[in-house]
Image 1: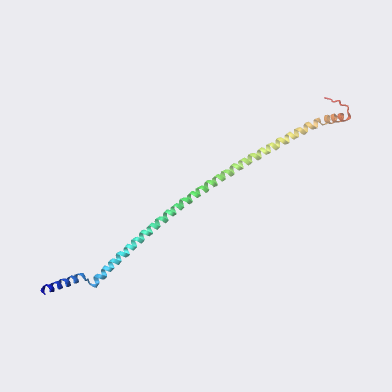
Image 2 (image 1 turned 120 degrees about the horizontal axis):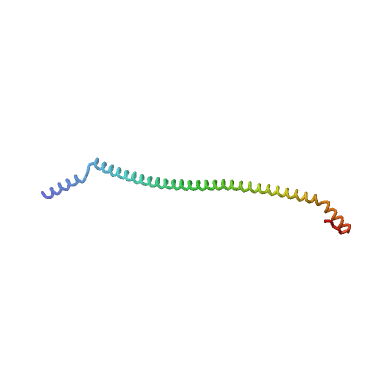
Length: 139
């Protein structure tokens, strides 16, 4: 029996060591909960950093695309302005050429009218003789 009492004492001593005080148990739960909360916070921070980084990259791409579109519009506007200037120069040149042609035509018409006026009497005589049948022409 003496041996059995010692076994009982050892078992009781072991149980005492195994069983912890309530405050120790609460502290372990608190530390575990604190670690779990910290892990969740760390995971959430990583998720937020990832999303922020992705959105920042997306915003940077959008800015670059917008800059490219703005540059294209600026080039187009510049080309249109150059085109308008060239168009205006071509139209001005064409109008000047038309004015020169009109002036030249007016000079030619005036010249033909002068020549016709000088030769009018001879032409009338020629036509009258042709109709009257004399057929004589004077040179």
